[in-house]
Length: 368
Image (cartoon, rainbow, N blue to C red; front, side):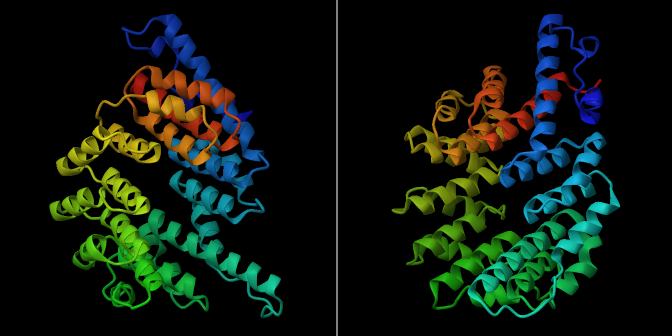
């Protein structure tokens, strides 16, 4: 298979390229592990689970190897829109113009007759939601190259697509694009406030003061949670203090949103808040979120909880554990990822572990 034939390009793992401190036997074990990870990613491209296929398509772009291009081009015809979106985005990251063209196509309406039955309306809503996700992804990866398509999407008949285009345009710095969300943030309806807070967080440019007030004192749990999540996009010290305080909110949802936001920020205050959170032995999801954030900024963490979590049944927690192990410096993290790749019952977790192994092996080996 093409990727396996090109695995040396994907993984600089030959024994001759190993660092002097690494024995040949260790280098050989790592090379074998790397080949197994690449093989699993290749095989999982046709997995029955669309979440797994999406994870594979995303991983190929993150691993940045052009040997994956044939696989990704086949994924452009997948029946699931999220697989197609991920494949198109990865192709664009690999320098393929087809990726941008196909991603723009995913944002467009299919047209057709107006839905006349509840089933037809539900299908239309699902298509519009997928098109909105494509719009957000387009803005994220293509920047100014996506402006014309985003302007077109901003005129789309579907409100969800128009909102996604407004978010993407605001991220590009368009004056006034964030105005509808800044207005909606004061709405009496808590669902509207929550949605506006989430949108402002995706933009990450405006509304920091009002988001801080909502995170600290809004009567609605969902609004406080979304406001905390949004503050993760800002870098001011006052936001960090608000998020640290929100770790003691009466709502578990708000506490988790605050921890996730702190994990996205790398300033010393956020690091201190995450370390303080771990000292009070929080629930596993909170603890894993804090560990992931700390490990990703180079802090030393204990891999014991991640190990225990991979033995449990919750796939979302296991995914978070893989994220922890992907960033952890401890050598046993690679062994735990290898175990997850080979033995986990969930195909998506096996794929995420395989991608993490490739990244870790690259980091261990360093440049040739």
